[in-house]
Length: 259
Image (cartoon, rainbow, N blue to C red):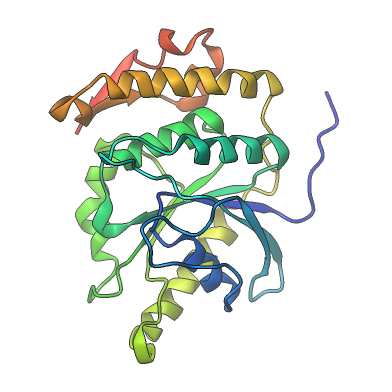
């Protein structure tokens, strides 16, 4: 058995589309502004940034703020450059937890595509992943989002170790401060509960195959139009199927799911 370096400080990767509030989430966790945020659709995290953040218990975590996964002009194509950044990060850092950040008002099929590409293909489905739904400050009960969308998430073929419905803004004059503080506690609870003490490091031979597997996945996805895109390439039990495959096309489309 080869010696595996286990960092003393856990690595938590935050990823998601542009504009879902990843940097704001980082700031909420840090209880101060350490990550630059923007209200612009283009986002403001051009490259991966890392931040050392302590929990209320004094435990230190490294949070990785990643470039937004743009949908493209027609809302269907993830940013290839952002995924290159993610692939490089996975190849360099041992990962303990993934936070998938989505905006409650923008939960579309591209959320499943990004999930498959990063969690299923790049990370082989071998890292604990949690869902954080942002932008819910106007909801009387933020948890209602999950009550209304849990079955949708399941039909889309996504599975998470846990979830949190939150807001990452206090609003003008701190109008949402109470919900903000509740949200902070919810996300920290996810991190503490699901951050794997033993980090995942990819096999180098696997990383070499990632670009072709992602290309094959997107080729299949982009070949579909209209309602056909509701049936996405299914990565059934991500790691088990993909790691046994010799080519992406031999297994990635063996199963499909319609929602």
